Amino acid sequence: MIELLKTDITKLNVDAIVNAANSSLLGGGGVDGAIHRAAGPQLLAECRLLGGCPTGEAKITKGYNLPAKYVIHTVGPIWYGGIRNEPELLRNAYLNSLKLALQNRLSSIAFPNISTGVYGFPKQTAAEIAIRVVNNFIKENKYPQKVIFACFDDENYSIYKELLNQ
Image 1: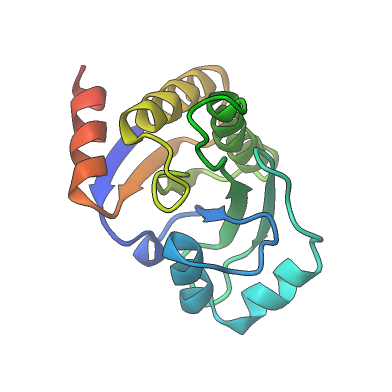
Image 2: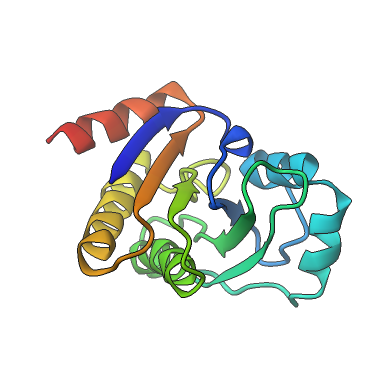
């Protein structure tokens, strides 16, 4: 089941929220900073032990002070006009996050709009990739049973709403 919400992802009571992290996993701006602030200093301490994360990959930590039990950290690509395999890297960020949810038998997961903020990935294309990957994955696997696209801004929410209604 796919759900669309216009909300702050840090407030969601799900098994895991996905953090659109940078490759250091040590916090940053946007959703990454918000998740680190809401989770508390223990999240940063655990992230320090992970040794970073390459673009398109994903790693899991506890959720600490978040309502979510876990945080799946994934690194989306910076947009360079599509010349550096950005669509494939974004696809992998979603897919590897879903694979971690499956491996950990997580029933519910919430995604932010990965790479569409300061990383500059075109929002429409990013939403198309995200929805396609999630639809294909949940058709083939038992977990997660519920996927939430948590949009923080009106523009992403409108794009996802239109695509999900098709």
